Length: 240
Image 1: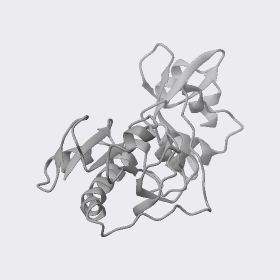
Image 2: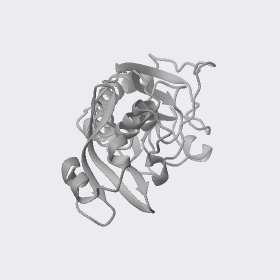
Image 3: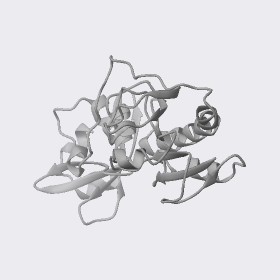
């Protein structure tokens, strides 16, 4: 089987490594003939003309249980909204945004303390294993893609730096979920007198976000005790 791989980033890397180890596939580059394409964490919609290059289309590994959390930020969105489970989906792409028919899915529980970095690594590994299991069966005609469910569709948004801001209008749980979702970027922060204070380390205790380290704008990170001594007027530290 000749295969062309489209992908980059931490979610794509484990799949590429595993594919390179398989005797049943050979990675080639366009415009060479290929049986199937694989796209992971690519960040762009692939035109129909490119999809048509492959007799079996292009298979996408998406780190959510589609149709929940289509779009660019599925892992961050699951954590941000306090989801207790997520997973990975293998689908055959079309020209929509994560709308193609499903080949296989695997569900995983989300730990209440798991961060984006940790969950991303776990889903990347699980997804790579699922890809290696399902892809040869699909190309051999043993698995037929099925349409996505018409129910439960949600769309994730492109995360911006300002999404990490904490305000007193947020509950403790919402703050904690932002901390988990926005590691390592954009992180979470609060503003005081037009200065940004980034919470670089935190934990969850007694239903509250507990700060372990804060980094004032333009300064080094410091423990909460050091911060309170050095910045006694910054009252937001008492809230978080």
